[in-house]
Length: 128
Image (tube, rainbow, N blue to C red; front, side, top):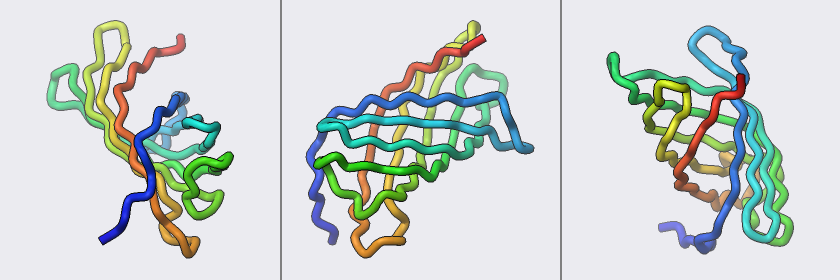
């Protein structure tokens, strides 16, 4: 059993998904800042699908990145991977509303790998 060492804390997360695609995979750039200034910056790929002909969708993402704990929660080292699942609704004007869960950890590349989870309500606005 793993002892949880992180307390619940707020985080602001911004993500930009350029229109660049590699076959079925999209691209994403992300930046998050947590309580106390802990910062993560990363880039990676997404894979999304719709549920039939409905406005509902799902998306998986994986994004390696750089993490600075700034005296906050120590994730074991600066290289951290963010991966997750988003389930949402896309309106007629392209706005997306979703619930998202993601996990950040160093995938065992450092001796200490406590990981951290984030549950979010996301609003995505198309930039056109």
